[in-house]
Image (cartoon, rainbow, N blue to C red):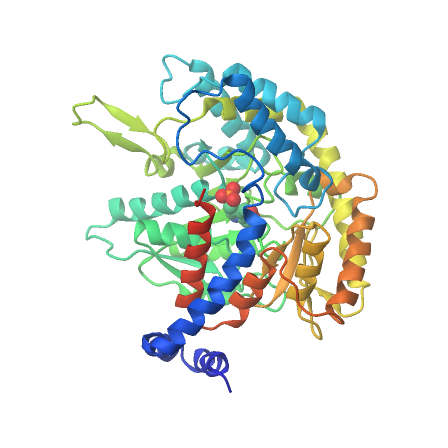
Length: 508
Ligand SMILES: Cc1ncc(COP(=O)(O)O)c(C=O)c1O
């Protein structure tokens, strides 16, 4: 057995022993040198695909001595955007661009241009920024059970803030629960805990790292949904909140939010529904007759939610909403400073100055689309999602994971699914590699509802499966990195590899 095999066996037996073994193995110069050599080669191949412009277009590792002027700078950006457009516009990406229609993109750009100077930090100069954000939050709350919550309890009116994306919405919600627990506790809660299913977005890990929270991950059931009984068992007196997703990023399934939120309510702690992906789909999916379990503020124990306007809300990138049941809970998110020589200071979110143009574009996207527009978009996405799910299920050797609506994950029992990912990358597709278990997913967007896109996806997938079973591995995209990360039990080594990948992105 090679070193990877030994480490894999150790990891299964005892992760702590595996971590010690990793440290010891890496202290052996020959092992270190071999890993460095292998990852160096891997990253060199990846570098070619993420730095395609080197030597082809002008680069500026230093500020040009004489400015190029607006026309030349704009032409450069437009040229690169033009080169990159076909892949996302033709629907070859999973998620990423959720609307992408020519008229819609031109409209967002026009709105941004009209409001590009707006900074919501200065509400006196730009009261329009505050208006847009207040209405974005109120409209989103109205979609996600806000009316039911307010009718039951006026103090429980659903409020929130606009943020820069799903990750910031989640970071802020987790900080809010930590700070509320600190404010409530007579003695300091030294290590607050949050209990989340294994499948909840990695932004919860980021929040835990940033804010000194212990994230307790609980394995999901065989249907890839959260296991409410196991989550209940993981709650301790230090737990400040529970988490569920509607739907999950990896497998697109909706967690049993009612059961999970009941556990949280019973213990008097918070419950966050992460509807970053589903917040602007599920309300209409239910109206279209799809089976959508309760997931929003209509469920009594749900105390906060995240919903991404920059995904299926069809806003430009850089926009999301975090919502709370009651202004008291939201107040723990805010930052205020009263003694700074720069004056009295307050801000609702992580950033100081913020791009009000993005809030204007989000507001405009929402009011221009309207309820009927989202209903029609959802109808098209879910019809395409069903066709793709059924098409994948009909391909021999592939298996759809769970029971998804439009984020369709698939694995294979007798085939290396990362080879399929790699062959799809070779055909131009940018799909998401998943692990634990190894799988690939496609998040269906409006791009995939255009004529011929779903059929092309299925035809390419059938060909990729045939090739993956018969041809040697190739070097396309991130596929080899996913394959390696999934099989390599040395997590420290994988972390190191990911950091080296980020370094590479920042190399001019
Ligand atoms: C369920 C879920 N939560 C959170 C996020 C994070 O969102 P963002 O990438 O906008 O930070 C995503 C992103 O895909 C998601 O699918």
